[in-house]
Amino acid sequence: MKQASDTIPVTEHLALLAERVRLRILRLLESEELAVGEVAKVVQLPQSTISRHLKQLAEAGWLGKRSAGTATLYRLVLDDLGPDQRHLWVTVRGQLGTSPEFDEDTQRLAGVLAERRTDSQAFFGRVAGAWDNLRGDLFGHGFTAPALLGLLPADWVVADIGCGTGNASEHLAPFAKQVIAVDLSEPMLEAAKKRLTGQGRVDFRRGEATALPIDDGEVDAAVCLLVLHHLEDPASAVEEIARIVRPGGIAMVVDMVEHGRDEYRHTMGHTHLGFSETQTREMMEAAGLEHITIHPLPRRGDAKGPGLFVARGTRPTETSITSQ
Image (spheres, rainbow, N blue to C red):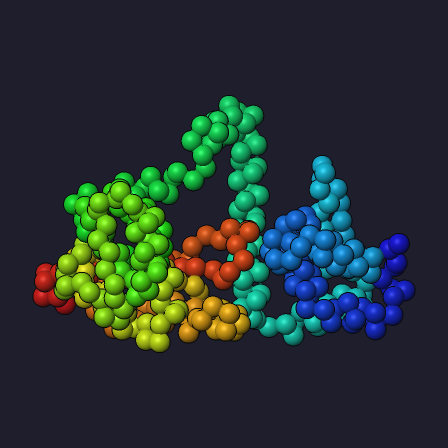
């Protein structure tokens, strides 16, 4: 049963706020009204665990809740708190500061809200003519991004650096003149070859990202997906990527944004805990690339890892060098 917050000893409130997960939940619910499942997606814990925390916070008067259809929505409204409780939260919130964990919560929250908007739009689409659902039923929901690869010039040669099992090469091969897939691991290359059996446009080469088995300017574009954080010297790899791209060609890197998950060093052998925008830009500029753009990628609510970014730069042409 919910108690009036002013009858609960401050020590009990402090005990509730001593649990970091509950602090993260309160921080989220002060900014947005969320359902249990949405909070679970952002915090990345089971719904049963989140339900327990929400119940404790609601019973202690920290949260208000309302029903919306079959869902229960929770919200922290500062003005609804008692004076002592409000003062306590403002004090605690002011001491939280910033952290990679809070940053990731904020990014995942944006993804959850985007999914909510998409669901709403899909609902009105069904009312208006059911086109979105019909299109999804007929063709699936994942064809848009691969289809846009058709914008790739058909005469381009593209390098897939650190190709792994061939995920990127598989998407690129139907649209490029040739894909050069490079990886240091022989088992990875074998898996990629098996995956791309019958795809004659892929040239598999074994080599390191910092010493690529590709000639200067041999490719029109090079992509490097989730590789740099494994390397001792990622800047050297970016220099190699720039070297193999023809003048005017494109170098693209996808990797993790800077984060604080130190356990990745031990569980997955990561050398770097992502990269800041400044670090990424400095590496690309040092490699001689120009027209550099860096964008965070949209986050799905069910994604458990850190956020990702895509960085793109072009190798200068003789004309651009002369004009500088």
